[in-house]
Image (cartoon, rainbow, N blue to C red):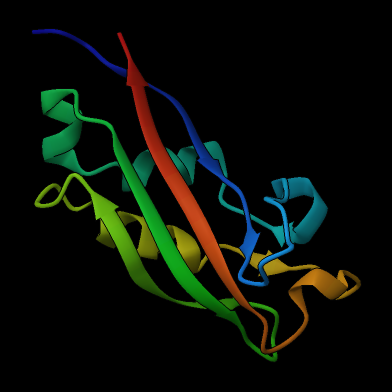
Length: 117
């Protein structure tokens, strides 16, 4: 059986404002998933079949700075990457001192699952 290891899950914050650029995690997240939490959400079937996935979540910054999200897009379908990304979304908390992620801001949170042997 071929073994796979999680290379990385990349998540950057894209503000929905047209002039905004992708922002790195450290610049906007007060709290974010740990590598162990990321690995724990990798869909089991995708992991066993060596499948990578990409998800975009459409999120709103709540009063408590957590993200309230819905799946905007998911590729490939039928592997559970969208549900996995939704579980990760609950681990993000936006920094209170970052005006780019003010309460009520709508943001796109892309999450990519990648594996390597």
